[in-house]
Length: 498
Image 1 (cartoon, rainbow, N blue to C red):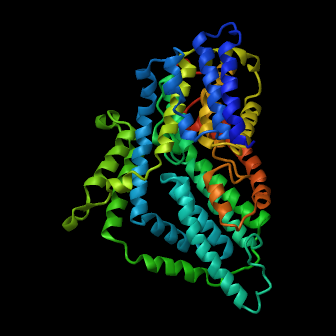
Image 2 (image 1 turned 135 degrees about the horizontal axis):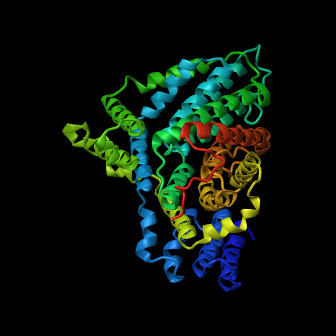
Image 3 (image 1 turned 60 degrees about the horizontal axis):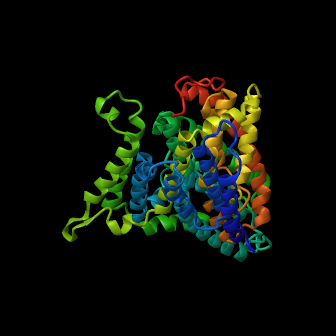
């Protein structure tokens, strides 16, 4: 039997065990039910016994049946305002993709950074990371992979035709420059995604759970103040490691590489009026997200980041791309291509976290973990980060964040330290899995190029995983308190679980 078949049966068995096992002292009946549901969902998420979004729908059925929560209450989690932040962001992203604005941004970034082997890899990584801040990691990786493969094929033809370089092995899986380029594209998509709230799903899961558990809102700017510096440093380290240590290039110049990039740019033609309009809307939305946390304007305090995202999406529906044909920048045919499964997964995550909080399971777990009070915070953060990174190597990063964040909230309560310390570490770690193709969609996509083998990905990835543990731990301990104005060593009085 394969993993999914085993999980299909193990999950319900574990769930039934929780239903009929003796109730621990201090845990309510509803808490036991939520624990059983969490174990069932974890089993099915880890083994992918059924589609991951389908598992996220379990609380809608089991919460009411087991007396945890009324149907009207549990379904509120699936219409959380942060889900509309991602929905609006997705709609803006598919509009950017529809008019090829993302490709123009990426190609010009690569051209500006430079055309030596190391610089072209850096250019691809910067472009991919920037796109991943605003559009899905999967979409940015797919787009950059297409351009990267075109560059590699052209370079291979030029090298094979040159008598002075024909001894260089440019075959898939043997060309060090190609390996570094492909890994750079995939890794930078994951790294860039941690920069913004909409960059990758775990970030928004964190914001939603913080709001539902403690009633505290994380703003777009607040997250960027931490996420962007972390991403920049990790991106620089990854580039240096790939190009200087793991897979240094066999050549000191790229025959044909510059020609390919210039041809790709010329093929796009002059920037169209549609691209200019989309760029204007995108810029306004990004500016509004950032400035909402800075400007003291009453109107901005009445809205949330989700309001701005949906406003941007609606504007794209009404700005014409061709008025004579009554065509607009965004149409519904394009809009429905957004990843609805991610939105459902958010709902399941928020519902699970709400169940933890309202059933008293979070408080119970905090009591059980109280033995850790007084432990070294940096050590605990590093261990948590390490465990989450390697768990993410085997299962969905969004599912990992969804399952572990409520537990981290309980652990923070038990240790009487600020919840942000463990929870931010967890959510970043869920995006920093670099060893295996199954860990993240970008890893799987670059593996499909055949320029990278699993052993090659593991060789580079295991060291980047460990570097990620160190970097996340240090940034959470020292940068997070500074930019978010918190004391990581103290549990704030305002953070009382609802």
